[in-house]
Image 1 (cartoon, rainbow, N blue to C red):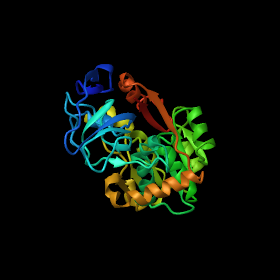
Image 2 (tube, helix red, strand yellow; image 1 turned 135 degrees about the vertical axis):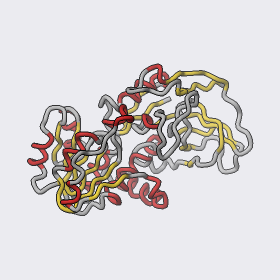
Image 3 (spheres, helix red, strand yellow; image 1 turned 45 degrees about the horizontal axis):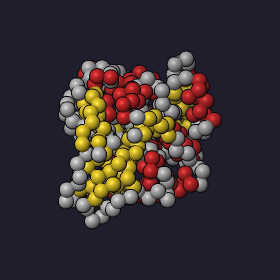
Image 4 (cartoon, rainbow, N blue to C red; image 1 turned 30 degrees about the vertical axis):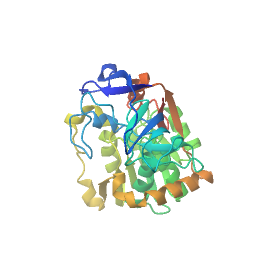
Length: 331
């Protein structure tokens, strides 16, 4: 049995390119004691992958040049020498960008596909759904009637933050790139308004849509967008730092917002979001997210691309604004 895998060939200096990765075929080995074999079906494509291939220390070590690219994925157990797993089980784990995973069964999670399709455990019930949930409700401490602004509002995390914000009784303003994305943010995901950062003046639109200031800003992009929002905060505002996708291709030259001292006058706070801070509440959060989806109160939107050979191009879509919702690669 052949395993197709994607290795990190070199560290990118700026944007991900075709030669950043190399595709290889090897013979898939059988599992040893305590191991399982998984035929991978869907791979999660995430902005943080750009930080994983940079030579920087983060919450996890960088992927080593020559190693299989790190990724969360779901698939079917095709071989098992572990008592908790049997052939046919649907599972989730950090299986990497490859067609077959053979390795330790620790930290592999069994999936209940009666609750949701397997791919949703990479999106709405996976890391992105949890980031939206904990980011807006715990870090952002959202209260009913507050005004929320969400950048990358059509993205994997953003489109769920918009919906959770509305479900919790907030006024929600999205920021997205392009007329079609903004239309989706309002008409499909339910925002009260959406600002097209490509064609509209962000500061002027914030004055229009948020005349009393922004209570919670959920930041997925960083850079100038973050700086602009800091100028429009309400008293006691909270900024949730979920990501900084506008800066991931220039990690060596990232600078903090020039106007961060505005936080003092507003009594505001800015806090980073990391799902692992809430691991004890994962099951409860997933149950609530699944219930909301089952009741039609929120929608998980997945954009599915195909083929391991298209991994570099698919990852690049995140940084050129070509995705809506959660981006997945079907093996």
